[in-house]
Length: 144
Length: 90
Image (tube, rainbow over all chains, first blue to last red; front, side, top):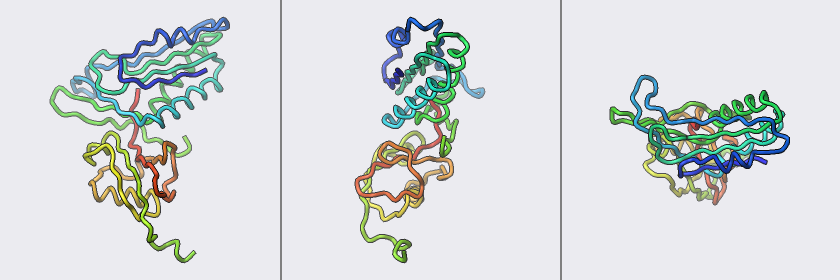
C-alpha cells in the first residue's frame, strides 16, 4: 500500500514510517531531501515549490507502485513539501520497507530519482543576490 | 477530409492553468480563453505569441483534464489544459 502526500506544512514522517512497518519487514530505508544554502556557486536563501496537484499525485503514486512491482519490497511512501521553504527544511521524504536491505536501498533510490524526473513539481531558488530562478532539471519525455 | 484542415468555426472555451516559469511569464496562474486552435500544439503557439513564452513546445509536455495528452489532441469545450515545463521536484 503506497501513500503519497503533497503538503504545505512541515514534513513529519513519523506516522508514515510507522505505517510502513510489517512483520515480514527486516529493514526500512528512508531518504530526506533538505534545502541547502548554495546552488552552482550561488548563495541560496530558500526555495519555493509549486505542484500541479492532481497529476503530481497520479504520477507519484505510479512511481511508488512501479517500485513495489520492480523490487522485493513491502511498501513505499513519499511526502513532498510545496510552498515557501527555508534553509534546512525537509523538502521531500521517501520511506521503503522490505524483507532485506538491498531492495530497500535500491527502491528508495529509484523512487527519489523518478519523483525528480517525472512528477510535475517545480522549484524556484531564491538567491542572496536578490534574484530568483525556476530550476528546469528534467524534461518529461513521452512514454516515460 | 477536406474540412479537417480548415479552422473550425466553433470556438472551444478552455481553462488554462500555468506553473513555474510559464506562470511568471503569463502573469497569472489561471485564465479562461476561447480558441479555434485545432491541436494543443497550435494552442501553445498561440499562447506563446500572446504571452511571450520563452520555452519552446519541444521542452514541454501537456496535460488535459489532469492526464498527459498528445500534442495533436484537439482541445474541446470545457477542457482544463496545463503545459508542463521541465520539472524539478525533490
